[in-house]
Image (cartoon, rainbow, N blue to C red; front, side, top):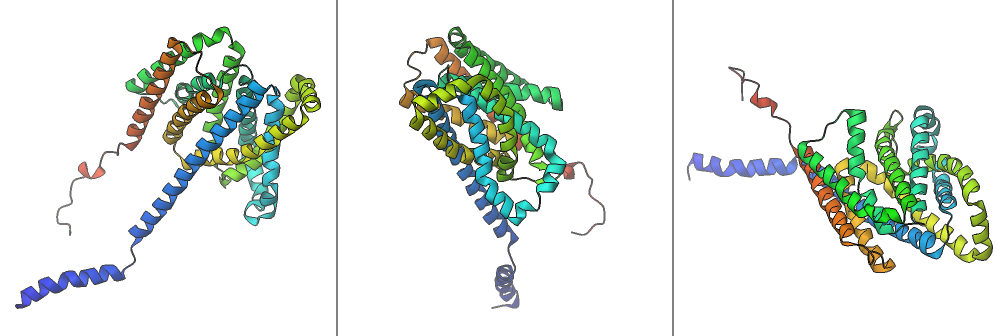
Length: 357
């Protein structure tokens, strides 16, 4: 065996041993990516399950069973969530030491998010007293249109031609689906549209506040801080519009009323934490795609469990199909646009002469 052959054989072995002895940062990054991916999948599943459960429960209780006090219910959800998290937020040093800093720097943003979140949930719940859950979700599928309009007005972001076409078809589909429903549930349509607009603004603000001047805020902090403000904002409207109905339900159906409030409050506190966490964990495109999946799930469950969709006309089915298909294409266009890598800088920079390898 020649010396050159020995070198050829020993060099790879030495390299392999050196590589094995050295730490592998790439492996650590892959492990972190896997854990982050698993957490994102968990958040998605929890969001779909809790959102579907809460919407179906609200539609059954508020619309079908007759517990028509959506404002009292929403206000109860808000204060219950904050109260349930209070022991952890006040006793854990990581959270307790930051209360003054967060409230001093971000109180305006938190107050705006709390008011919009409370009103958009209340409007959405109120719409379920007069219209089907399935129609409610079709209208809410127009969120991409509203977000695009806000992006044009606030951030001067002009959508591409393909995105404009998708947004137009989404609007057309929603109008087709809602046209016949408008004869019977005009109030429900107005409440759902108002809820959709406020949710679009609120989701945009939440992302900014959760990474604001006080540092990153997690979903527990957002739920804890926004709960009391939303409760205070909603309570006067609840007393003015629903006090008599609420008192009558507590008198005639005490077990059903209290049981519904407690059960929905327990679901809502977990859902609010998951909702704020999804804003922080997922991108805006991922959130839009998740919203489309959620709507499809709710349509299927409302048809299966509540017997909805049976009275829909052909135009409403066509509008529903156009809305979801174009929303899916819109999400795909946004995702592919986000994935496009920037132009390589090395192509435009000339190589230096005389440089080493």
